Length: 141
Image (cartoon, rainbow, N blue to C red):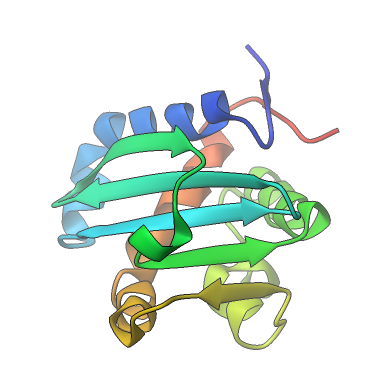
């Protein structure tokens, strides 16, 4: 089944992958954060991790209640996902770390400075979360 991006079904499929690839996520260490993914000007998805797995995804949310929100254009997110699908994981030019630092095409918004710390403390788990899209049939349009 093809999953459109962005959609709640896409994020739910990534959530399921954290359970199916539990050993991989355990090796990355614990991750306790609630963050947002903002695609373009309108679409916001909330994602919560506890210990080793994604425990909740939902549409919308209050950015003030999230540790941080990763904000990017639809094209930026699609480019990252294309890289993940093509290479079996994001290539160096399309990782969250590169896109938020060097590429500056993704922005991390946060109210509390601890949100900035959590983004980088849990970066490996968050990248693996998105890299799990390699196992999905994603409709990027």
